[in-house]
Length: 454
Ligand SMILES: [Zn+2]
Image (cartoon, rainbow, N blue to C red; front, side):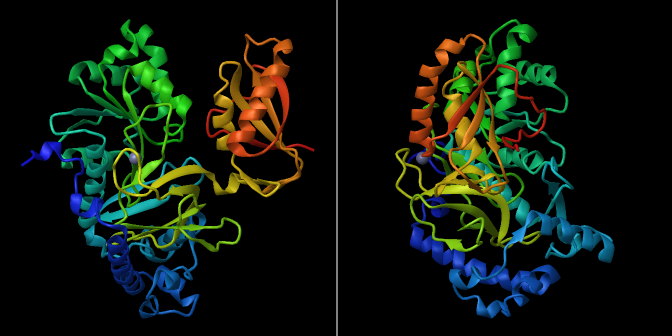
């Protein structure tokens, strides 16, 4: 008998469940969840009433797909209405009695009022289980020390993730990033972690700062794993290579905080990225919709659309057909890494999507394509539009910066290579407009890649 440490999966029964069986489990849980939400939340009751349905009318996934989606703006409105009518922000959405709610997390709130996630102890246990599934797949085992250098304050990925690590029996050092870079490095020295969880940009910052702050390269920190979270980048081969080389680690991208949607990438070389394995399907029903028409898109291999999720077997704030605006592409083929579960790639934001000659184009994809040519290009660019998207009259105009060691004479041959790479990766033929390094304004917060010019 193999020792439990050699097991590949944390929860073999669920994670390796055949797809047909999993769908049966999902449908069973979905029916119960719809009925529970209907009984306990005026907000969700109204969602069903909008299509003239009662819970017993939802007998299939297709029936359920008729329920209108919930957007982040609606989530905020429901919070405000709850405060006005009931004196707390979650009365309309949280389906469990108030004394059963044991934790409130929130989104980072970088754009607008933070949106809240409310959990009962049952929900907290589910979240712990999902974190355990992810880190176990990546090879973490009891005895391994993991340093958590993400925001700890309210953020759904903060405290919940630390609890999940404890749940699987590994050791967490929840240092957070609020105390700054120096403090993170102090705790690396004091606790000798083998893994770090941080944003890719913080990772890059550490690699740059280590020689100055500790007199050694980041490789000397002794890390074996780097888990990317909190921002895109962990799926970008260039970013992955930078982290892998800088720290001398395996790089994993993962997603999921204090809620039901969780995924982790495969154990694979940094120059590759096959997406994240979806590990929480027993508690999260995923659907794809067309971002413009809101019509369902069938989840088949290669399908792409706006992600809509519904929490299953969830008590506190069980989101139902929640559309956060992320565009996903699904891969249902058996993965070369041997791990079960469909794979997902976040390909951009629904509101950033452009359509050029019938091809969907995401600024994130353009960025990935350009970064391949760094440092000959800085990677800073803007897509210039005459009018707001999504429809763009070709050619797609891209203003981009050439690196400081590039002369204007080099530009024609560089441009040829970039255009052919973009054509291959993004399937559009843009027109490039070159400017010197430092011309395009840098933004501290979220970079807007699209600029409307007249
Ligand atoms: Zn895989």
